[in-house]
Amino acid sequence: MRTIVWLLAAAFLALLTIVLSQKGALDPLRNLALTVVSPLERGVGNAAEPVADLLDRVAERQDLEEENRQLRQQIEELRAEIAGLREQQALSQGLQELLAVQEGRPDDRFLIARVIAKDPSNLKERIAIDRGRDDGVAEGMVVMSAGNSLVGVVSSALDDFAWVTLITDPNSSVNAMVMESRTQGIISGTLHDGLRMELLPQEAEVQPGSTVATSGLGGNFPDALLIGEVVSVQGSPQDIFKKAEVEPTANLSRLENVLVLTSFQPARLDHTP
Amino acid sequence: MRYLFLGPLAMTVALLQVAAAPYFPLMDATANPLLVLLMCWAMVRGPRETMVLIPLVAMFKDLITNDPVGVSVLALLPVVPLAAVRERHLTQSEFVPTVVVVAVASLCYHLVYMVVLTSLGEDVPWLQSPRGVLLPAALLDAVLTPLFYLPLRWVTTLEESRARLRVVG
Image (cartoon, rainbow over all chains, first blue to last red; front, side, top):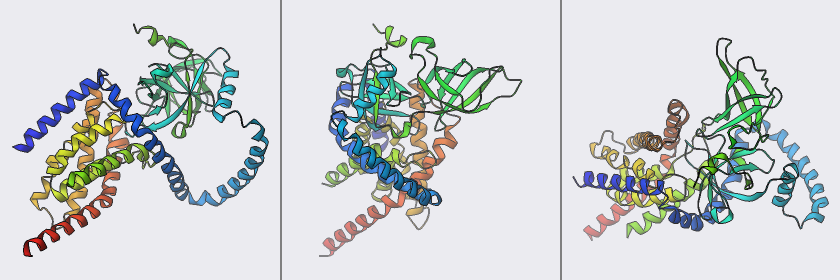
């Protein structure tokens, strides 16, 4: 009997906090928790990443020797490159990346953010960044990788942190265009399987290797923002539309720094009072 | 006194889960060490202690993730009724039932989690979930069980034998 009472009480408490958190009443508490925990979280993440890499390498043992040789060569090349780059030490790597992106988008303003956590859920593809409302980040803002390709959208902004829904999240959909044929479609996230481009007209010429970028339609994303590359095209002749599997350009599983596009006001932001 | 040990332990496991588990996916699923710890604890020592910890640790976990605060509490609640299996003594070994209930608890966790997300208007891939989430996660959590079960069993046995010695003394 006592267990049943406890179960009911715990369920009630959980439902109450879910409602409160949906209304944003627990955001200050979340912000505090992340402030306290994020250094630890980042430390653990930094420690886990090499271990995970090592395990990946063990799993790919047959390629290890060849990769090792290539890596040694790369190390030599990189050492030479580092020596050449010493003169430019004053500029941080993040700033250099920003400059490179800004050169490509001179009218836009960016905010560099560090990725501090990944959502551990099996059903979401989200990351936490160390910039929040106090830095000018707002929900709906577009997030890009240092390589100038689309990463996702800010889905919730706390005072000092923000959660970004990646384009591979099942909740994500982006109006996109195949650059070569100017064919428009919608890019959606799939669970663990990269991206899918849907609503492609049957007669459209879409080939594997084609480049996919944002179309700008709907006003939620700027246009011509690189998304990825078509891997395969599916659909039988009797279908009205065909689909394409798209490989994201940004390495979304290994993001360290991202750029929040603060100058672009997505259409959905304009609806907020 | 035991909560002074179990509380920080569970919080550490929750933090490790949030910070490190995403780096070690297996079949695209990530493990839920917190669930495995709580389920093993409930199976080895009974559900009373876990009843105190579930709300605290699950809330802590939700606060440092993007989940609605409270969803993990709901999703971890099945741990308590599932621990009733230990009273049935279905097999001589306690370990095999523990592995099985960990897998079942993992399935329950994800199902509750998906129901809550759906009810909050999130797009949950239900059709893909059995192959993409439910089964891999249950398998991964079951594989993790010895990591938590064996030390817990050892500590509990040690504690019980000390208590017996005290009674005899």
